[in-house]
Image 1 (cartoon, rainbow, N blue to C red):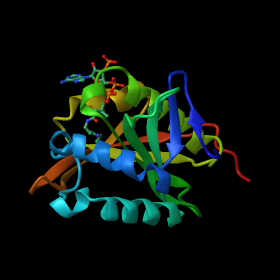
Image 2 (cartoon, protein in one colour; image 1 turned 60 degrees about the horizontal axis):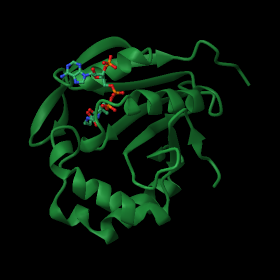
Image 3 (cartoon, rainbow, N blue to C red; image 1 turned 180 degrees about the vertical axis):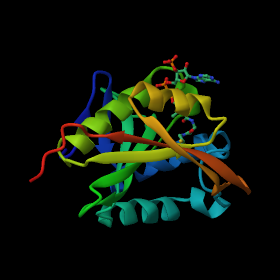
Amino acid sequence: MNGILRTERLRLEPLMSHHVPAYLAYQIRNRAYLRPWEPDRTDEYYTPESIAHEVARTELDDTCRRFAIFEREGETILGIINLWNIRRGVDQSAGLGYAIDEHHQGRGFATEACRGIIAFAFGELNLHRLQTSYQPHNKASAAVLRKVGFEIIGYAREQLLIDGAWRDGVLVALINSNWKAS
Ligand SMILES: CC(C)(COP(=O)(O)OP(=O)(O)OC[C@H]1O[C@@H](n2cnc3c(N)ncnc32)[C@H](O)[C@@H]1OP(=O)(O)O)[C@@H](O)C(=O)NCCC(=O)NCCS
């Protein structure tokens, strides 16, 4: 399949309509686990129709590249990683987001997937900058971003409405020192 990214242990597949059943299962499995970290979702989100709609919308969105994470030979979705708000022109930047299945935490998968998508973003997409944020108590995400080279650039008070309250965010960025003017 086109557009697949491979790392030492992982396969990152662009999320497409044939992933809908596996993606729905991943979301249902991780519903409670991801509640403190992801947008608030109602029961209606966890249906084939809603997930299919999300996937179709993502496929059509040039400003977003979303990947399902698998082990090299695996068929179960272990996580999701995406570039969002891809901006060209004077920005040449994107946001980075990711999550790993509750039952596969602490195996280095997020770090490895981030390295894969950074190589793609700075190589094939030739972006100049990635940025994201994490809640101050999200030690695992802070560790992942530190390991792959992000630096702290600021602090946003009451940045995102998550799990029913406005949450602060530590802002981080990574610059592509090999960026090439085309
Ligand atoms: C953040 C997340 C993606 C990390 O996934 P993962 O595959 O477990 O990450 P990795 O194994 O690559 O690395 C995790 C690092 O965090 C560290 N860590 C985990 N929990 C920690 C804690 N409570 N305190 C300090 N460090 C912690 C681990 O030790 C590891 O660092 P190390 O390799 O230096 O030891 C995962 O926890 C997750 O899905 N969380 C919910 C969604 C989320 O937070 N997404 C990001 C939003 S910004």
